[in-house]
Image 1 (cartoon, rainbow, N blue to C red):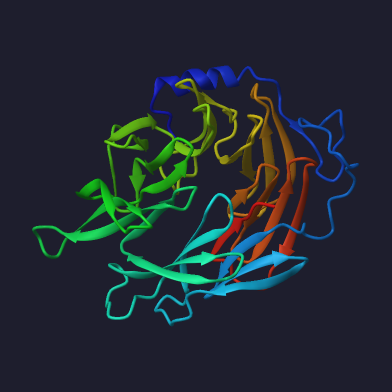
Image 2: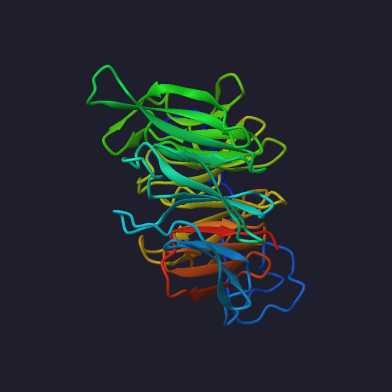
Length: 366
C-alpha cells in the first residue's frame, strides 16, 4: 500500500522511533511482560475449551446461540430456498443485544428479483419472535446502535435502461420513512458503519472493476445535511471523545494494510514500517488498540498485537479468524466454520470446531 498523504509519512517517522515490540507466549504471560492489567486469576495454559460466550451466528436459515457448551436455536428466519445455497444474507444486532435485523437472500412473495427486494425481519433474541418489515433492495449498510434506523441501498435505472445506478437512504424502522443520503450514482464497494460518530461509509481508491480519485476515497461522516470527510483511511471503531481506530489501505483486497489512530484531527500510524500487512480489530475502552498480524495469508496463525496508548506494541502468537467481533475483553473470530477467541485480560487463545457453516457472527452482551 502507498501512503498518499503527508500526515501519514510524518506519523511513520514517529512510529519508527517507538520501543521495540515484545512477544509474549500466550500460554504463559507474566506480570512483568504483559502490556495489560494483571488478570484476576492466575494465567497458566490457554483454556482447553472455548469460553462460554454468547456468540450468535447465522447458519443456513437459522440464528443459533452458543450457551453452556452447546448450540441452541434462537429462530429459523429464512427457511425458503434460494439460488445461492445460503439463506441469511445479513445479520445486524442492536448494541444492547436484544434484537437482530436479518436480511434473507430470498425474495418476498410477488417479487421476482432479489436485487430489488429481499425479505427482511426483526428478531427478538430473548423470545425468538420474528417480525417482518419492509424488504431491502440493493444493499444493507448499517443498523443504528439503538436499532431504530437502518441504512439501505436501492437500484434505480439510468437514462440507459441497461445501466443501473444505486442510491442510499436512512430508513426509520418504525415508520418506514426514508431520507436519501446519497443520490443515484455509481456508489459501489462502500463499507458502512454506525459508530458514536454517527453513520459513515468508506470508499477505497481501488475496487473490482474500477477506482476513484483520492478526493472521493476515504471515510465520510454523515452530518445530517451532508458528508464530511474524516480521513483518507478506513474507519474501524470510534470513541465518544472523537478519537478512532483507522486502517490505511487503498483497496479492500490490498496486500498492504497498516493500523493507526486519529485524535484531535491528527492521524498516527501504529504499525511499524517493517510490517506491510496488519488489520485493525478493536479499540478498547482504555484507549488500547488491538490488531491482527497474520503469519501466512489465508491461514489462521499469526499474532494478536495490543498497542498501548503510547504506541508500544506487544505480540501474542496464536490462531484467529478472518473476521471478528469483540466486547472490550473477548475477541471472537471465525473462518466460516471454526470459532477463535482471544482474551485481552490474559493473552490466551481458544478455538472451537462448530460443525456448521458460519455466514454471519455477533457477540452479545454478557
